Length: 116
Image 1 (tube, one colour):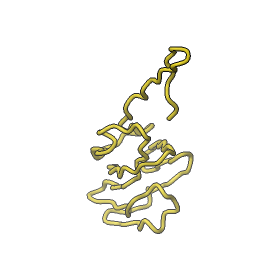
Image 2 (cartoon, rainbow, N blue to C red; image 1 turned 120 degrees about the vertical axis):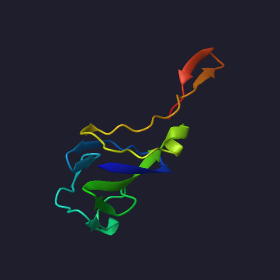
Image 3 (tube, rainbow, N blue to C red; image 1 turned 60 degrees about the vertical axis):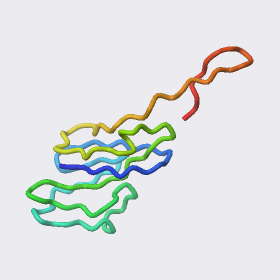
């Protein structure tokens, strides 16, 4: 399975678990095991806002395009993500955001982590 990520600035999160030819996106299950070689599943047939394009099976590999939500502190790796190729089973790893900057409280001289 290969996943192309389309970055989009938004404050929600996406957690993906891959198990064989099934993806679980934020707890919602999508099973693509019935797709044959050369098949295309139109994006309109998938009831999820996370899919950014049709899903195809080319040379036996599923090709999936998903939205990658970008937090306010997104990194260059998130803004321009490399395709995820031969994604293994388990939680899908995404590029990580930049560290959240510390804010100094002028009244107490303490540092606090800014809210995301």
